[in-house]
Length: 101
Image (tube, rainbow, N blue to C red; front, top):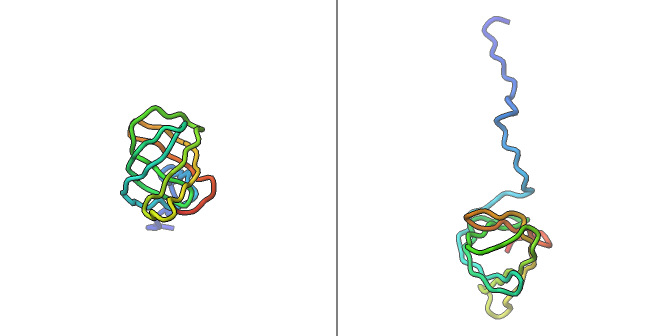
């Protein structure tokens, strides 16, 4: 047909997002332990499956860590996670059990 545009999708421009959940920007500090050593970092973003934490240190993919939620002083809830990504800016962690921190 004359004058008809091809509306086919260009799949090369679609993001191949590996994460299973929507990321939310929630900047706040977080305390956590890796190999029994304490760290303080800044949460950059969060999903139901994990966090990206801006922090300096020597970390390895696959290491376990414990996040401390000190916002509720009465409970001081701990949350187990695993390091899934290491960059110059910080670490990406996945929660042992999905849910927001």
